[in-house]
Length: 396
Image (cartoon, rainbow, N blue to C red):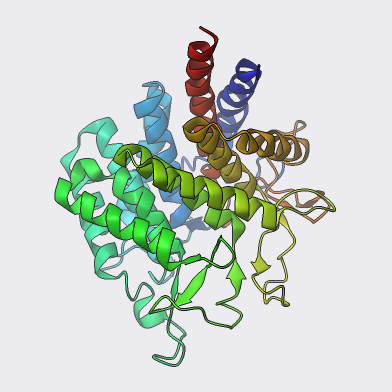
């Protein structure tokens, strides 16, 4: 019998006793608003710029915990603190969202990155659930509509690509829309949600899926065909696996066991392909033809890739009972917990070299904030609790 209680307690305690207190204690900027995310190993601020991805993610994370775990006033106040800063400073004149700001809130980088808008949508959609403030619903809804309008040209005038020479579309946006459409469905017409779900599932599971290898490509030509180029050969195992647990959630909602089964199989196939058999851990980037890559950091081991994989494996096991999911979970769990947590100063390292040693000892920066790890711990903990119920039924 699997020791689900041990795992459940481990993930719960790590979330509530280590990760959440770290961000509450070190991230809040009481003078100018918003959050510091550039935190060194001990949690000290080493840069004060504010990145909209991470501001939005922080608002979402603490709003989600308030809504789904416990209505702690401290969590709501933290979320509200970030939202106030975003409302005041983070949008350009056309209501799209800048990429980064100074500490005081002055814009640094133009709103070229549509994922700033995605995480702002998540943030205000979740905060609306906590507060029932109509202004938050309006921000989330109008930003989401803007994202849909820009889907086919997400970078707009800031794109570096020359039109029509090698037009590509990227996996990241349809992937995140799988999750985002559920995140704010309480603010949308049901027919719109259903249409979006069908479109996103098709894109993720058909257009970007390479039938020959069983893997998900990061970029394809506009007609869905393979591009034999740096971008076209690129695999991002973490992206692919993260998307698969989004799809499993959609499959559960749709009562589509075949969709869940396919997502589970892609998860396992990706992991088999991307696991470093020499040092352990999951490669950051790969080339589907095993050719040299542009990404010099291809062999690094990153925090988000591993925690997202744990979520997908646990959901795969919950929904299908496939023992390969559990065997891989134990393998990925052991490697992750042996290498990423920092027992001396709290939180987790983000960037390890191939052999699993910290390349950077920071706990937060331009890309790493209070998102993947706490979300992953929460999702995993909740899945263990569901598995405990299943196990009890089987024993009875």
